[in-house]
Length: 160
Length: 90
Length: 87
Image (cartoon, rainbow over all chains, first blue to last red):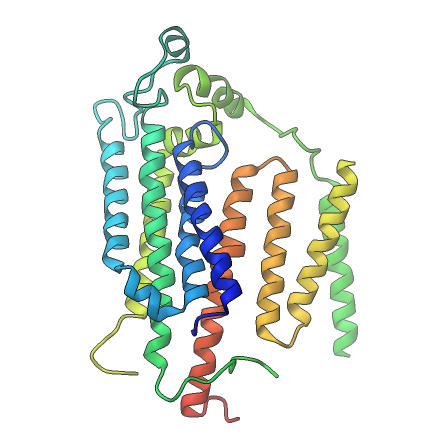
């Protein structure tokens, strides 16, 4: 795909970063506000999609390295699985650091949120989903270039 | 002939959809809800998580979320294997 | 008020679904499908499910539109390079 016009690229420059900020906001506040790991990860993965549409494949593949998304995927999956495994003397996915609500109201809470593994699993799943959807879009885009042999035609996918 | 069959099938399916919508429950009143009441009461008290949906997804029903992550990982493996850059050009 | 909003959103839903089938141009059809997805997200938000609304808006209107457009571009190139469906 060739890059689009200057208007689209300027709009992408202005608005693309808000997708990352909004996705991180949804992920981090997953236990207090609507949304969670999957939703925030999907919003954050829209960022790479917007870059890909606005700037074309050649520039984006020179900017990003797909191994980073691979590492994000493996890190998120392993962190999620290990957090589930750590509550094992009681049961799988036992919430072992949750603080009851009366204690939180009496004393306040520190760095780790009082909902325990819920917030940590939110962050892990958010990282995993953002990496996985980015890999899907990037590898499907790379699949186009496998088929390219002749010169690039413009707008040849229409049904007319 | 084909159009008559299409019209008859459309009328039957439309009547079934209208009948199903007519007998639907009113909004916000599920049939049996002891499990929902337990979740809503104990999500804030025990786990101190204001968002009940996230506490169900990641705590009470965490094993299903493992399945969802496995589904995503399988789709990713399939797409990566389908679009890989091999030695032989297509 | 709420009932009126329901009626408007559902009518726009049916309209965008009709246009997604009616357009001969595939790009226009995909854009209409994205509008359908945005209307679905609005309907989920009205029905008090903001979780599903965020997921629907991000995946339906953002990711799947891009994936459809990438697939349309790829099919065009296959058709052009080796003859395709005999055009």
